Length: 86
Image (cartoon, rainbow, N blue to C red; front, side, top):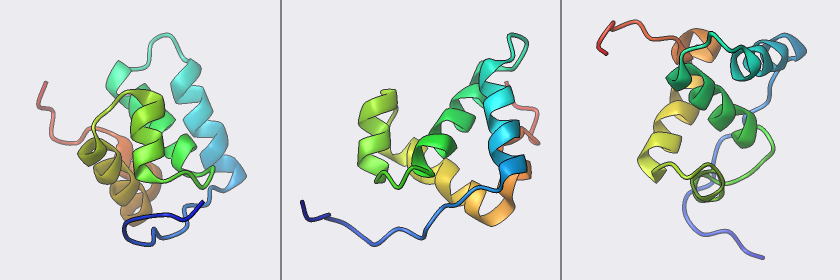
């Protein structure tokens, strides 16, 4: 099956990053938005396209793009709210 769209940069996780993301997803006290961001990154790390992740997690394509990009640029720190806007 051929892919459409731009070639995505590879998103690979260290063991430490994967463990932290999985903790954020499982923790009952995690903010739901952080848990969702973590799920998006974990799905992206499987090699899935943005559109595949969008369909699987029932989120918009721009949302997947945003969090994939933020993670690639800032790693785990990019997923944590720093603007306090909620």
